[in-house]
Amino acid sequence: MRRDNWFGTAVFVFAVLFIIGGLFLKWPDFSHKQQVEGVLHQRSVLDVSLLMKYAKPPIYTESYEMHNDNGVSTAQYRVQGYSGKVVTITLPPMRTYDVTFFFQQVVLEGIWELTNKPARGNTDVIYTLHIHQLSGGKQGSRTIVFTDPHYWATTAGRQYQIELNPHGAVPDLTKLKSTSLADPRYEQIVREFRNFGTPAFRQKVAQARHLVSVSH
Image (cartoon, rainbow, N blue to C red; front, side):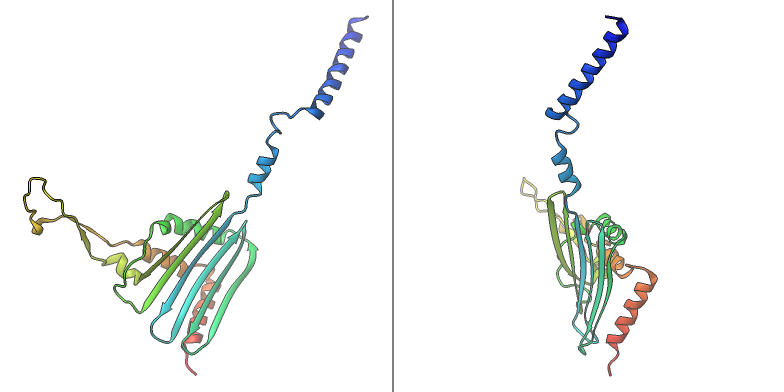
């Protein structure tokens, strides 16, 4: 047999064996195809909201709600007056990154670390923050209630710590070290909600607040 005929035959046989092997063997690159597809199709949900409840007229409640489900975002502002008037502004579902960026911003500013606070400062308004995230099959939620974000951002008071002497000596209470309880994140995150959306959206929010505030 000539050398070139032998070489061509060997190549042909190898190609046939390769194709047959591909039909029956699970190659490493494709053995985890189902797991890869599962990761790609995992649901991702982001929810964040702020509810403000007023003790005195004219506004009874205000709320912002932002939702993102696998890249499809919606947002809503709702205001209700003591008069009974209700105005709702809704951004229809669309593929936009506005809600995702907003969610990332409040997370960077520490919304997951905030805690409930007692009624202090101006107690005429009660703020309720809520955040929920579903990602990679895991989820978490948090709800925080507080009053007067400016008070908690600037005043808030101080925290003192007393360390007892193991030898029984009484500590000098006039020389205690203290740390400030002020936390600017409460006011920053409320401001983020107030600044959400385009100028046109914020203008409609201002008009809605004015509408329910005017008595007829």
